[in-house]
Length: 387
Image 1 (spheres, rainbow, N blue to C red):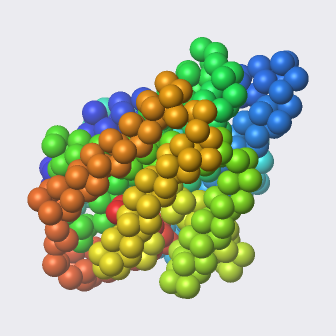
Image 2: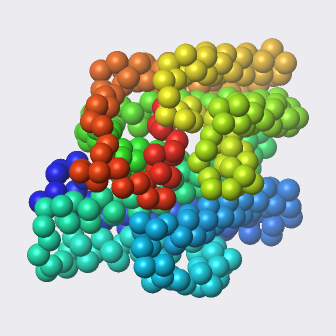
């Protein structure tokens, strides 16, 4: 049996199915909402809702296809030089990704291979072979979880911000809006935890994040900080739609900082620029370790600015729009921002002081297989490190 830290379990396989249904549900509710806005002649809301869906789909298809091509040309993954990867030719991959089915293709391949290894395997594996099979499953799951992370911050997070702005700022409420926001919120939570756990399991030199309390504390830290930040941005947009310019500036700052760090995640220059732009979006809403370096100072600066925004947004709305000071929604949202910020920061400190798994100091070598670096393992090593 493989070591427990790289064992792809039946529960993990079933959770992959749950993640697929959640992904479909999130996109379906957003498309339905865009159609409803269009029928009501709210063309701006309809267009923005649909744009977020399309941007998330487009970017994930680009990265998914590129990673398939990288793996196809990798001499270790494809030693025989076959014109296929996972049984898919280049032409078939192009068609699948043009129709937006890249993530669904990866879900299918992961579930299919996982089913053979976990549920149906009658092959007598050696310990090393079985470990390799489970590790490969986690590499596939990590690729998928990274794409889901991109989709979450390009679609679910902006969608949640947009729908909150429409509901709170324009009083336009419907069951479908609340359903869309609920799916977006759960999708954010799922993507954060799934990405962190998959990434740490696919990197042999990094310890697994324990389930239970550490995972719960990390999830609460991320959810509280991201939610309070989204609510702060919502209040700023209610104060003035031109606050979107300020959000654009924050995105540019995040993108510029990522560029200054000289990330080397992608195999081509133009794709690296796209990657840095996506990271800029992510940094607009939450902190991640962009290059796997010591980021204690950067994290402190980031969350000082985060606290400043979360304090300033409600105060600006109270001073510049005093008629809202007694509004129920303003009091409730302000309470959620202040409370969520405080609780989120407490969980952040608690997690990193007491629960954060420390890295193993094991050095990679050819004997234990860590030195056999493929495109997939190089890619995973350069993924965003959770922060």
